[in-house]
Length: 543
Ligand code: DMJ
Image 1 (cartoon, rainbow, N blue to C red):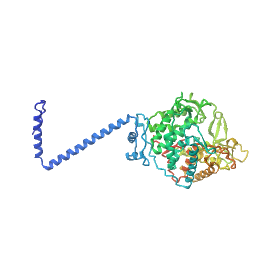
Image 2 (image 1 turned 120 degrees about the horizontal axis):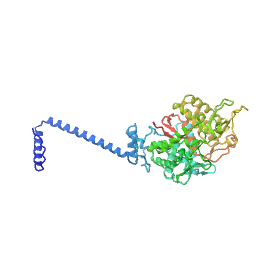
Image 3 (image 1 turned 60 degrees about the vertical axis):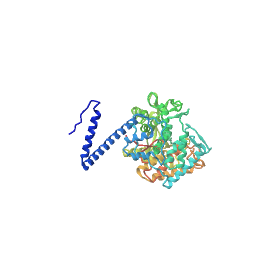
Image 4 (image 1 turned 180 degrees about the horizontal axis):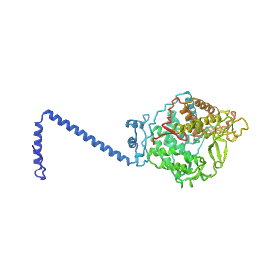
């Protein structure tokens, strides 16, 4: 038997090599055909195994490199796949939407810890347009409003439909950004293209203007994030990140409770001009948007800012668990003796349940209910759906009836801004409206509640109530160039049009009506989406 000698001398190397090769060749020739085939097979199998092991290692190291770099879309998708229970094909297919290859990101910075980037549950779905006659009527209303806005107020915040003009509050094209997800959900492709193009080309945030943190967060940041999730179009995300970075200085107060206003260009934040305090509801209602942004980008700074506020307010001392309406950003304390607007309830002649206000730090009760409060039945129902006690649903149903009365008792079938309740039992009327409170701003809160309640109970009466209210809007607020707020719901002969169509009419009011009239209970699945304060759906994350 030959052996291989270890030769350390350079001179003899070639001779040994030749001998060894001759000897191997002789052995090979002596083998049978079958033996040679066996050896071939073993060599091929071994080579394939080695090749597989080497390429797996190389892929692992590529992924590790990605984790340290600024993201680009393909890298992000690759990375997200690691955290995503869905299969690779599903995720990649979703990145191409409706045959449109998605934008490369520009300037979206993502923090290094890529493991923090979470994909939401699979929520992408196609919205193909109205399927019921009532939905068709709502889409027609939307198109009418959009046409007027496009003609007379394009790129401005709000349409003034009577004087054929516009009004600018923040100068951010509010109506477009606020309503683009409604457009998408209604399946309006032409309007979607117009809105998307305006946002891409004209929505810039380096404007030397003070804006309100809450309003811009719920309407603009929420709008951008929502449409980003619905379409996966990264152009919207890029804009959202830019905006959020300009809003963040609001949170740089001593207490962490945000200032109410910020200049988007100088990024200087401050309290409102008329008061040292921020509004408690405003500073606490901007959680979803900032948390969502941290989940998408992997940058925890947005979530950190808002969760600090949440923790702070939870830790403050409260009376019966209720909080006053003002809080100081510097001290982090509630304003003494301020009103609690959502505080108590009492029976009136026909036993309607309502929400009143506690004044002077909770000492006096005022039987007054803003239309804004009619969001509460829906929120209670959502709570029950997510595990809160069942008796909250009973409360929700009763409040829903009371809010219905605020519409049904007016000859226009439209609710006033504020309703008072007769708790003295002086006459047989349950409710009354003061002249200064008789306006209707096309608000959505009650329709929002009807939609939630319909989602969870399937009670078609709620659809019918929504339809009655929609007829009220059609009869008394529809004008030649859109829809207008009105000054008096009590007089159908003179509703006193106020010449203003707020963005939330398209963002919320018409969206909730469209959803309410759907025959598909999962058109917007409340186990997959959570809806922000301005009706912008955002995905629910598992953690
Ligand atoms: C909207 O901007 C939002 O719903 C906000 O939370 C309250 N006010 C209006 C609608 O009435």
